[in-house]
Length: 263
Image 1 (cartoon, rainbow, N blue to C red):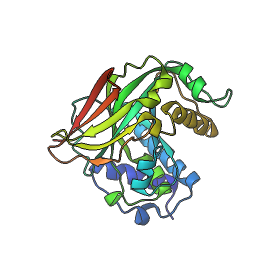
Image 2: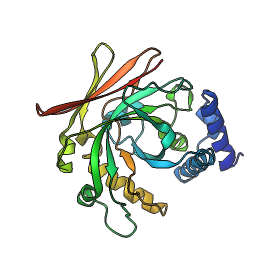
Image 3: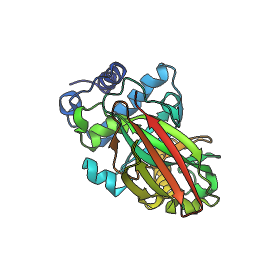
């Protein structure tokens, strides 16, 4: 039986080499606590390589993502500085099965610690600096995206890169739940659509969930953290030479785009 450290090293080596692995053969069927232990050990390898934590992702907060992947409940994973891209950038060449999800990102202006104070929609709204148009580029270590919740959690919920686009002109964070989102391909064909409320009922509620889950591990959200609150459409394959664009809008008042490419 391999140790948590050895399993994290196997995932890390595969990600660095641009290879995929069979989930069952690699990690078997860990319980959720062990899966998060593997995820933390994987983060330790990232930190040792010079990366630093800049935020968090929430996975499977929307019904459309849970249905697509056959996952029953949300999970979480850390984001590091080397995962961040700007709109229009190309994903890293090591990604062999990248998929893209449009998400509302919320950046904190103050720390949020659910160990010492309630974390709910209102306390999160008070801590948030702004909302951002984001695209998460997921890349599972597990071949063909064949995994269960625990295997996916061990693999950092498939997090690989995040495209951080423009700030959304939402003056009231409570309105972020009604922001509409569409994902287009290069020909502007709509691949999927949703609204901010598809993320746990409201993006602020998703962040509150994250704060409570981090409290279980003795952690908190820090000032400056970026939280991507969950895919609002199905995850769509980013093909070689392809381009995907997320369009975020609020009625006829405004529209904001964010784009990612694959060379």
